[in-house]
Image (cartoon, rainbow, N blue to C red; front, side, top):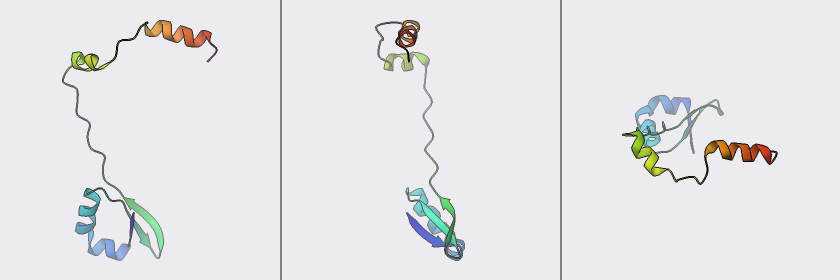
Length: 77
């Protein structure tokens, strides 16, 4: 994690944003004290094309979720 002063951040903002886009986090300081952190935005998740596709990815359970919840409840959790 790189640290830059506020003055440097103002001067080199474009270069700092390029570094953040490449995955680096940068801390901005004012008078030697950290005041902000610039971090990359998480990548957007790809939406599912269909529910059938999602269900096909799931493993088959041996019992229903209702039975699973009752068993966990009866075991005292």
